[in-house]
Length: 282
Image (cartoon, rainbow, N blue to C red):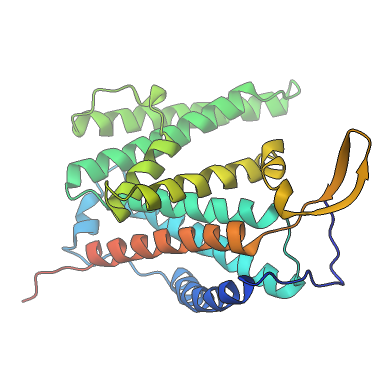
């Protein structure tokens, strides 16, 4: 795996088409980033304003996910332009975060029933608290003030879990919030079917493939590189194998990953705008 910032990598035939698409995506992302810098609250009387209840905000985590998604898309495009370097795995890692954040926003916003939107926001919040508790509880820290600080943080988190349990009870959810888990892959599959239709196996399969490729890149899994050997340059042959230079692939990897994140975030903004406006006018 090499990086040569001073030299541009040769463009594949399909890259010019993707560069034009990225220019169009960049314009949309710029508009989203401006919205993120100047947020507005849902209108009184809107569906989204009514979704939140005491102890549980539906709108805040959704908006946060949308901001994170647009931030990562903006960064990926800026980095490509600034470096003129198609890094083998880094853009896939960034695009993965943009995609996951957008998926989570759509997953909460898309259900037509308010109860389901609330329950999904509840599950995301419960899982977030559970992960924080596990992280602090399992962290090795010295005795004394660090240990006291950890104990204090754990107590705060457990108080939040207890408060969230009351919210769950008010919603009629009997599940223990301390044990609630959010399944990312399941959410991605649900959103893909929601956006593309349950019978569109091609788009659903492509979405799943992009998610898994991004995860493999983000976790430095060896198979991400091995599966792309035929696309890359053989540096030299050696007994029993060969040395291959792994290159980033705009046409087959990075471009589709950024496009998938953009499509999903576009749906999140569409749903957000639909639900944040009061449709009853006097």
